Length: 68
Image 1 (cartoon, rainbow, N blue to C red):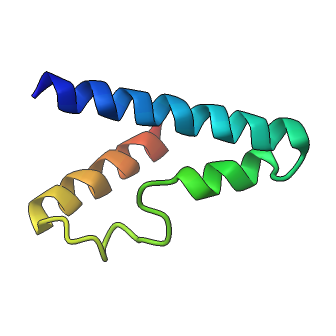
Image 2 (cartoon, rainbow, N blue to C red):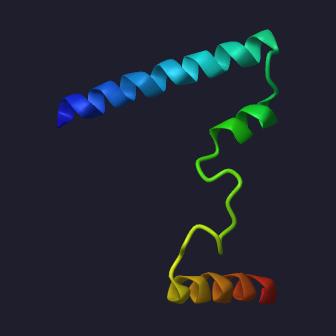
């Protein structure tokens, strides 16, 4: 199992290096890179299938933040 993590860490490091090189060459902007690297790009909270009780908690937290 630890080999899996080692390989994953190495792959992530290579991807970071590749991204940094693309930024240096001006092939991509930081905001474009961020969009590429988003895990849930294009999804909305209600579409990704959160159970209703979690959606209520999220809604309540956002309403509480608006009160302060």
